[in-house]
Image 1 (tube, rainbow, N blue to C red):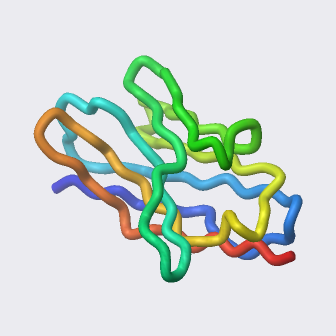
Image 2: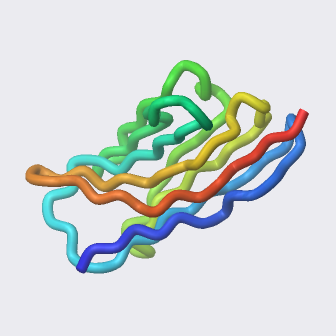
Length: 115
């Protein structure tokens, strides 16, 4: 059974940093990409960053230059380094694995940035 587990969220002051981790277990075939999403209270879930098997990355404009997505295939983990955090970065952050046939989601980790 495939399982994605996020960790690393917490409360941080504006300007601070956090590093989120997403560890996945089970067998996932033909991963197209891994991604981080976030959902702020009362808003829709939005895409933050993606990384392909080959290491190509994309970022939402709101996080470019501040966030970095990376992966460690040996550890079966994906990371999101978040620097220069802003209050508008507050939300629940989710990890997703997208394959040719389906997608898997983690349960989310809360990030709160105080002003």
